[in-house]
Length: 286
Image (cartoon, rainbow, N blue to C red; front, top):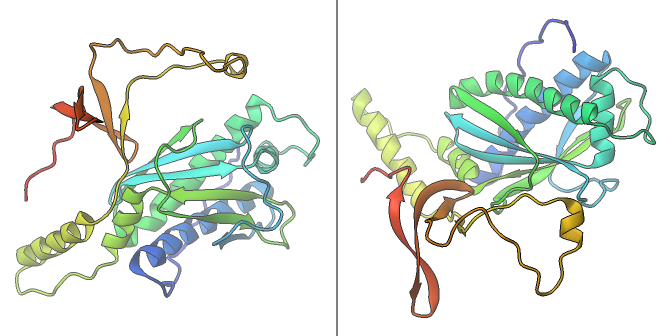
């Protein structure tokens, strides 16, 4: 949308005094807030300060089905997922800014606004990836839209434009346990060693030991189905929803929302279980 030159990436903010995980999560999200502020200012032509808040601001609306949601999947130097939720009024503001439209809270939220919000976030991702290099190396972030997260949040908070901004923009963020653990692991200083190879090995072993006690959510998925809203509203007691998978087909095992294995359902002491038949991402032995 804009042909203006890209501003230099934001510098890393100073550390926040807290636990390793909390400190790094806040540090990580401060980079996102600075990058969002840069992109918004570049597009709007005026400063749009963005704050990183631990709790919802007083004017933040509750979650609604109409909110715009995206999942950001990180790979490379950091691995894991982040969820962003923009309340519909905030998404409309962001879309209008990106499309150079007058701000009108009563305007209809159109598909063009949705696409504008996603393109805005892609530009923010570019700034973030550059800013992360100095501490976390090369980090690739992929944007996926449309669904609430399937994992439990290990850290959460809000990004909000400051009171002096010409527009009001708020969005909620959540980090998966995998990404939060990766941030915490990166904060652990490596033991000094006379050998560079030994130093790398010690740091890797320390990070592995740190991650061993991290709790991750494991889910069995028997199948999926896309439904129209009118069909969902017609559901009642006794309704049957047909999934896209036959009875004899293996079910999926998801770790923190990611598919890692498939297998057959079994019963163990009266509880459901899974006999693994195929590992999609084998874990190397240590």
